[in-house]
Amino acid sequence: MLKLHEVNWFNLTNNRRVAHCPPHFELAVFERKTDERTIVNWIYENLEGRFWFDNIQRRTGQEGKLELSACVGFEIPGEASYFSLMLDQFNRYDLPF
Image (cartoon, rainbow, N blue to C red):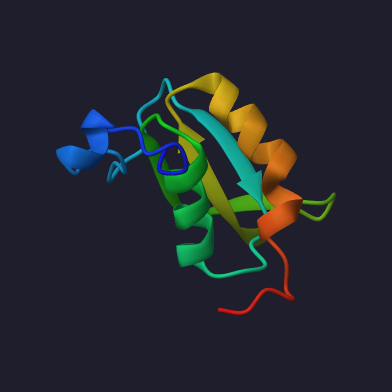
């Protein structure tokens, strides 16, 4: 975590954010209200495991419309829970970019 000034091996080797989502990652799907940089910076500052971030298409409602949603995958399942609980604090329209 950057907040605690701890060295993270994944940050040093530039392997913290992965390019694809492995099947064992725990996913958090949400409507993105802020820019990607704000979300990724929060993850770097508050969490310590590897993660994946991208947009996905999913079917919603009874009509089955396709909707674009943001999705973050976490290698540590507890980090997905913590991210989901804290999401409303930094995923807001009123934050400056």
